[in-house]
Image (cartoon, rainbow, N blue to C red):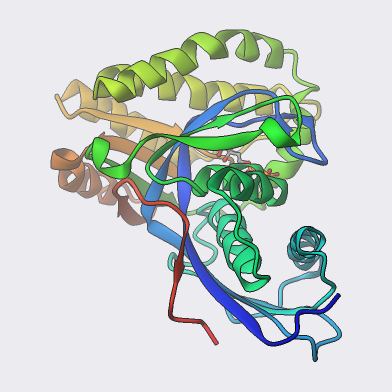
Length: 332
Ligand code: DP6
């Protein structure tokens, strides 16, 4: 079946920072994770995506940041469009344009905001109206962490056991807690290993089982700390979890190192700040940046201290962000 006329929609979605990390899948093809994860959406890190279904096209035309992507990222976008076409029972091809508001190459994970925005824009452009849960399930298949960028604010991804019960739900709306993620962007020359490859390697780590055993209690600590607005309790749990993600990566066979000397300097500076009475806690993703979590009132000072570190190229301050949403202004 073809859609009869032009159908276009544009969506915006926030990236998110995980407090408890997603690392390893029980089903890699469907991205069913080994564990629940908890995150906060980032209001200053967004992807905007316009999708247009046009029955006059005989291929999909994709531009990311104004450029045609390489084969692998293009294939990943098209596989996602194919999921939407299967849901809508159409074969119509698309024009897709996607734009991040944060600098490309800054190392901020963009697959979460990218697949969340693509899921919402593509389904609406295909005349589908999915529930939040259905959208989260769809976004998850493009990139696991993208399912957490569908609901707003503070979010938990329920790992589930199959595709239909693996999706993210809101724990609390953005205004629930006035915390900040001050992202310290650290320069790195090394080429990175994709998180997809990192997830695949996780099961080769002897440390994975230990992390998974510790997680139910840590997830409960993070939920309690969030609901109690207890930054010290949240901070202790998120630092533990970020380190354990990297222990799993480093003990994978062969080992994966995302660390750089600059990252270590930012982490140490956070600990020094804490010794000086500034409540700031770090977390890390599978990349070169350090995320500094603090109360809103301390964000300027945390950002100023981060800027003093010569390894830090740029600092981006994020408040809790909202849900993935449709907007009127199309990119083309
Ligand atoms: C370290 O969601 O990027 O950021 O499903 O392969 O796209 P894919 O992986 P991705 O993994 C994110 C890993 C992480 C931790 C997290 O965000 O939970």
